[in-house]
Length: 274
Figure 1 (cartoon, rainbow, N blue to C red):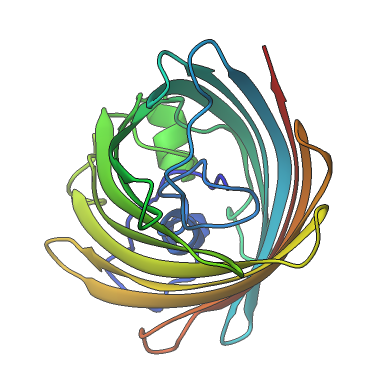
Figure 2 (cartoon, rainbow, N blue to C red):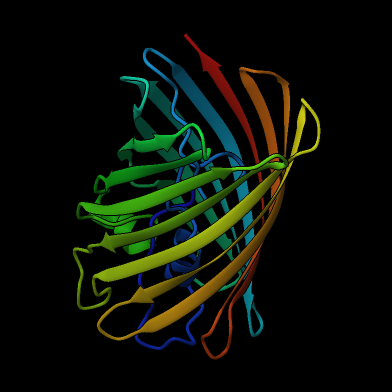
């Protein structure tokens, strides 16, 4: 799953703007490139010489009071396996925002992302594995930061991933922290985001999997402390071992006053090859 980088809240938290909604969405972009359509990542890697391309479409409709904003993101992610346990990847995504507030529309390319995943522990007897995932978000232009599309300074994230396999499927858990740095720190103070999430996945058949993904994020800047919770239901159809077709429905809500609620749909195609 891929969402744009966050734009910090305006000083008045009741201002419903592009930067408000992108902050809401961005909490669930990390890890940005999980097992589609999930927000929570797993410990799986592509293997030595393996390749993966992910294409997806994400649309979110966020509301607070009488305001509504729709955000669409079109990401592309390429992953390469350097060894059996280490992946590296690069991603880019185009963002389009439509708002019923004056000056709320935005359009542009979000922060390019470079990342890696290292599965550093695996126990074949207990079916338990851990992975570590660092990510770097490369800066966009100052004009795109002002529009709420991304951050004009380099930012980053670290995520610890647990996968526990069971007879029914697997449970994945993530604990992550990210740091978003802005050029205009007077309007947009730098922000630290912590995220916890848990996703059980059921193997319904050889082709179909069903998933539930739940979690919370805590965003802290010099002026705000915001908690946002999410729940997602998703399905994955795999006509063969190299192709996944995914669909997910996500609902989020924060603890601001007034609260911002968001309903999103994500659809994606994953292709693995050598």
